[in-house]
Image 1: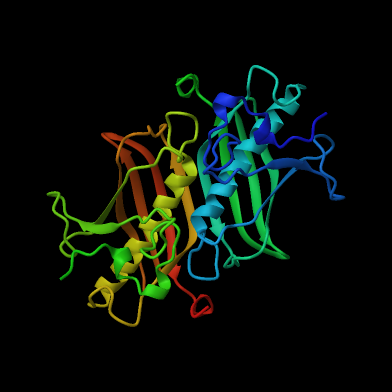
Image 2 (image 1 turned 180 degrees about the vertical axis):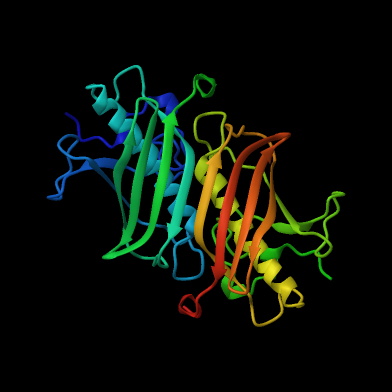
Length: 166
Length: 166
């Protein structure tokens, strides 16, 4: 089993996402992993996923606080990455094997619960509220230290063939 | 009356937003305006708002398609900008006069209806489903050409004093 980030297992031609693609040098390059309660990162034995991100200075909303659009973006990519990882697990296949199981976002809902301070590493935790072959729903919290600043839901659906091979 | 973009009327110390702040040189600098049915841009006589944005090459999801996090970000900033403009209108005050009426996002819901193609100018149209002094709800469509690619709802609330003067 590999401890690669979910997104680093995407095929090269599906790794250009601004939020999480390893081949997008201008993007956020979010990295998501399986997460166990004890804090160990593993790709089995847990139904939670985790990602960390430190916003850059430019990712400001009001001075001192993180831009909500960035938070939505992180939730989006952590959600679709978690969905893909779960799909591979359900198929009993190592992530990264062909054919790729790649998900896109059908709906993204974010509630901003508290202003998110700059200068703090953000932690995203994902759990699964629905798992079907073509649809996975991921519930995500975004925390800064002990404070949950945002909650989000990502309805992820298997990428339609019309979006491939462009 | 001015035809300045809503966001260009924000005070300098509230103009650093990554999505729309005129003082954020690394950001998207989205510009929102009042919109009349005839296509003329005006800051009165209409209950719709409009913004245009051309995604950059890096704003990719899957190659050929626009990153959903960017679409969420544009909806977010067009929503809060539209909310602020409506608040000034309701107060019978020109936008940009002190004290500032600045809104932040309490909730952001986005439905992705169709893949959004790269290389096309996106158009955001905002309408108002709720207008109160401290809460404005804006419904937004994002179109590429004749296709509505996404719909969003922004629940915007007046910026809490705790977020100011940082």
